[in-house]
Image (cartoon, rainbow, N blue to C red; front, side):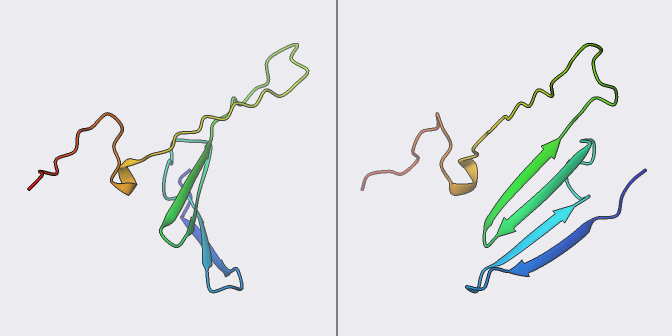
Length: 85
């Protein structure tokens, strides 16, 4: 079942607006949301098993964080193409 994208916005009171949207990106994940303020965008996704593991009495949580420098023009391991005059 494909869900229609949902979007809501609210003002922080200091002129900044926060936009929260779900259903547009990462549609193969069990859940995903994008949160944007100005030019910054955060994508959070969740993937889970449908059935719990037998004998497991706790809920393990793993967080994978990846900062992408390419959006700021900085690519790790790349060389500078600026020529000295």
